[in-house]
Structures are given as structure tokens and as C-alpha cells.
Length: 129
Image (cartoon, rainbow, N blue to C red; front, top):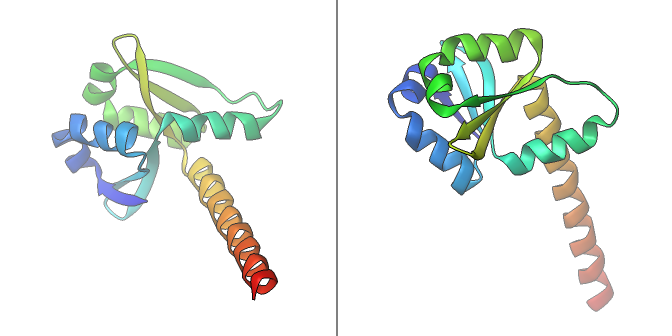
């Protein structure tokens, strides 16, 4: 997961979206030292929605150009109201802006999956050795 200042995101918006959507990277967007929100791939958003269960978390789909033009406001909206914004390019959803708590959930899940994979590998090595 990369941290990137909001000014860099604004100046390189298309490249950042490309990295997130195609490269499957997560980007924490910062304003000074403060993490505002995260830009995540749609696969991560689908996982979060699955984990949400019956929770009613607000989600809005916004055109890419509109997000780019109002990035600061959108980040504040996501961070302050804990909602999600799906970035759409034409008819295709390409990434999602999510609050920091969503990113923490994803990272915690990644850590647990890494630990489980390591345990399985150790068990396999012990069984083979």
C-alpha cells in the first residue's frame, strides 16, 4: 500500500487510477501528514461489501472527471461521513474511494490470510520432511 499526497493525485489522476485499477494497488491519499481516504481496486470493494453483511453503508458512483475536479471535497466526504465513492469512467467502474477504516479492514484481512498461508506451508513442510 502506497501513501500519496493529494497534490500528486490531482496532478497525476489518470496514472493513479490506472495503477489502482490495473495494478491492483491500494493508495492512501494524504493531506499533509493526515491520511484522508484510500483509493482501492474494485475487487477490494467487493470484498468489503461482502464483509459488510446487512450494514447499510452509503455508496455513490461518480464520473472520473467529477472526482478529479472535486477530489478534496470527495475525500472529506468519504472520510467524514464514512461512505464510499465508486469512480466511473464512461460506463465502467474503475476504482473506489473509501474511508481509512475500510483500508484497515482490508489490511487486517491480508495479514490474517498471510498468517494462515504461512501456517499451511509450515504444516506441509513438516509433513513432507
